Image (cartoon, rainbow, N blue to C red; front, top):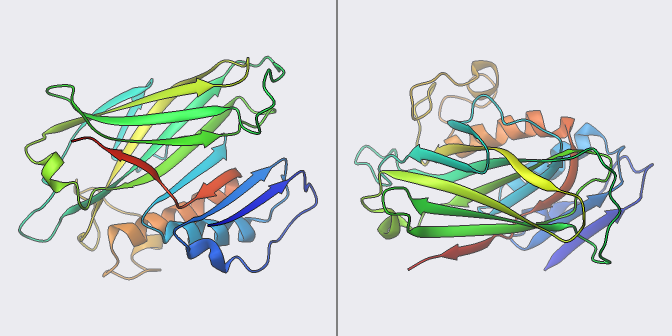
Length: 253
């Protein structure tokens, strides 16, 4: 299990030798390191996005417009296409984006723990309220920011039986804190990832960014490759707190 913690390195610009980023049990944690170059952050994100299980914590951020579903608050409902379709367009994974907000008060920590809290995301069958699967992340908030983002890819391969007959899912996010500063879930977003996609459309028929996805990647690219391209382009503009491609994942029977 490989980890890299970088704390208080304000003049750090580049990190060499990040080959371990493709390992399924690796983590990068950054605290008070504001000068990493966009190229360095791009390489980090690219490495971690190649794993099936990854989550990313950022300072600030807004849910991108290209996400399939958006909603205010800590709960979001969305319709689920068939997990397995005869034409090969099989639902492979979900990508969810949670924006956390806080008050402006610079409240001091009341705990000696090296992190500030935990975020828990639970997916329920909307029709009967039964929890189907859940995931969580331990987070460390930037003391100078009032907004943070948690992004995670949730694979659905292997959960076909649990999702059979489920028409609508509901995402619920809770924040458990270990300091006195008040945080809450401001908004949530979910993007549906298909195993096989058309050349110029997502599962809803909306146009992808042609300049990035078709001209740069080619028309045979998958949804995951298109998603990786978007994240690599957009996320280096933000400060990275943590990248991890080991997922704490619970499936309910």
